[in-house]
Length: 254
Image (cartoon, rainbow, N blue to C red; front, side, top):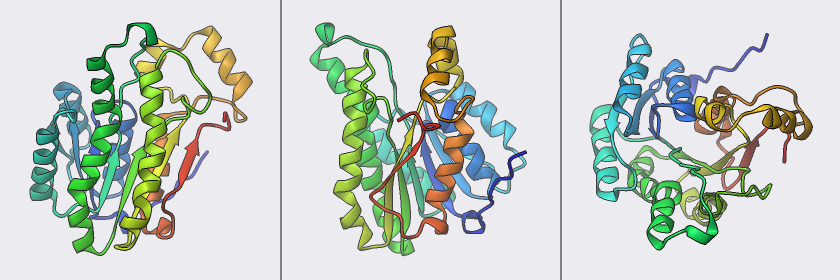
């Protein structure tokens, strides 16, 4: 059976996670809470968030849920301010929110383009902007931006999502040197095809299972917890000299 790491540096460390109510985000919230971190997470799914908080009620620090649509930049800034007030100066930010809704080039409208960028890219920039001063005052911090292998392997049917996810690599590289002067690390965590409930319900079929067997070097499903464990490393002191990098977790698909 696997035996996973614990990180003493994450005990009592403050972390904000966007999109933490379900899927990979919920795995992030759970993993950080189980390490003893003080977690605040943002989402629009109130019922799933309440269920998650209840599940983690016996953690060292019960996670704080803040209802927030990250596409609303004023709400995003206010939620991060409230998180600061509730759990303390923010030391870790996990930019997780995304939506890979399928769409076609021929029918995409300008409003849909702007909406996709707001959900999949823009909030990562402005959430980072909102926590930088806290991290500077703390003497350092870690920002984890969620990318995707979807654009790398040229998947069809979500060109806007692919565009945004590719741009996140530019965001990380564009901020690494500036933030690094204040010991703030910023990295891109790049998932492959993660078997969240949504992915299994909407997209996984016999053909998909065959594709996994054919493309991944490692057998089996990539799970949300596999991404969460990588995020823990990037948030902990163990990754103190890692910045401006892409950490791919995809079972060897790419």
